[in-house]
Length: 182
Image (cartoon, rainbow, N blue to C red; front, side):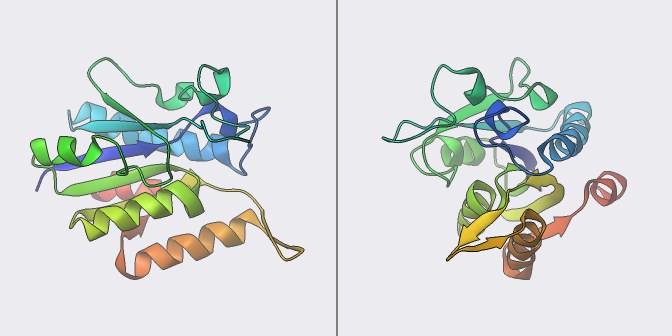
């Protein structure tokens, strides 16, 4: 089985003083960095996904801004693939699927942001495309959400979406367990 690490949208706008700060983004990025180090040490494929927002009204991940740049904790090295995307699903209108197929990759490990948006959309699409999926839950982050005047705390959003993915779409692990057992 050939596997790859998929790092989704760990970009500056999601951190302190960014245009869309997430709860726990720094800790999640530090966990992602540990997983990234493991993949680099084992010389396994690494794919960085970078979101660019070009839709009218966008206020974060704007092209050619500091906020759209990949965070230093997981900055790509020469030779690591980087795909730009414009939608939550990292497979949509990108070369990701073709690349993974060309490398005979059938197992994906995901870290990144936001849990309920791009992580969820991409993992579900990957499973539908018959990839085996693992999500490193504590290497993902989200934010408080609002629905009908009610605030849903980031920790509840995180738990709900990871629980939903774990039912069928992915094996959800924490960083320590993944590093020890894989």
